[in-house]
Image (cartoon, rainbow, N blue to C red; front, side):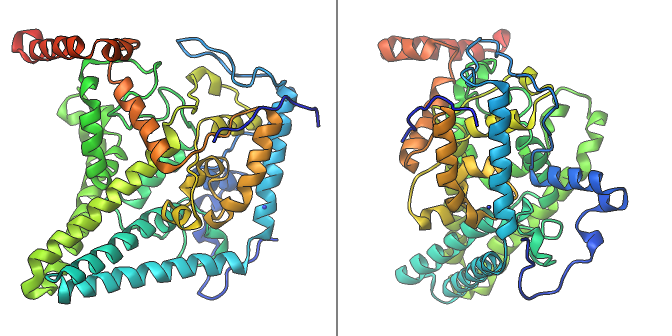
Length: 452
């Protein structure tokens, strides 16, 4: 391999899972009825896997954003970038070839633990939520259960990470998670779109979730001065915000009512799912608590709130901290496999921490590894990470990582900074009182009917 510059970093035989019934072949993908190549493409797309292959005569397809800037891989030739892609392909294949009983036992163990915590927490709340110890124990168990289900279990199963087990109960085509967003809608917005167009301005809707400007090349609009408040609300209501976000309702904004017809099935599906979730947490569980129903209702609300805040924080840390790159739409035209890998590497950030913290984040603390290999079992990311660090170093890129508080503060810093037009945040820092007063006058003026 051609040698590459080195830069210091900032702080792989498929075997079936054991037990359980097996899916019939046609259950893996409807596209299997067409042909093997199309089936592989469609299946990989649903999992968020790169479908782009290298060209015989590759050329660099990176294009600058509106603000300009240099190619972050300018120090590499296209041949070196394609060699990087081949290294990552080999790393991924190594994990695929070694999947087996140990991995299957891991996910079944996590699912069993989560269900025990969920049931145990609800039982404790039903019988003792009016006592301080019962409230804390029951709420804590239910909170951990909800985080495990959404992060380490649901998210990763829906990526197809465990489809190789051929267990119909742990499969991306059958799993419905404990979340307001229906699984099918989430797989489209997350696997099909976000993982394909990671951090591409104008293509990746996860770049701010439609309620935040987190990059100077995203256009500024007056309502964005409120984005710190909007994002705080989004964090509190994250489960429901994601459910609405997955519907891509922005496509219908400003259009006549009849143009919203395609959105109706999605809205109905979300409505049914939300009703089911609320019925379970806020009607059935409190009702079974008898005289303890008020404290149980508060406990389930608290567990959902904690889950929302945690999952929102983890997502922000993986996508928005300083050091994470964004890309122009033109850069994806003709993009090779090596370039796709490179965009995933540079458009993600990790969270450092203990093994327990990694599990509680759904191993999205290994966001770089996840974006490069979204269909690998999550329990294998920790062993992949040192190899990824080595590749970053050898090819001269920064491996962006840090403790959760540091990454979260960095992400929120962007939310505040880009709430204002480019360059205005520095003015606020130099003249805070004057800037706030001027901003208040501007906000009042904007609120007047004649100035909208």
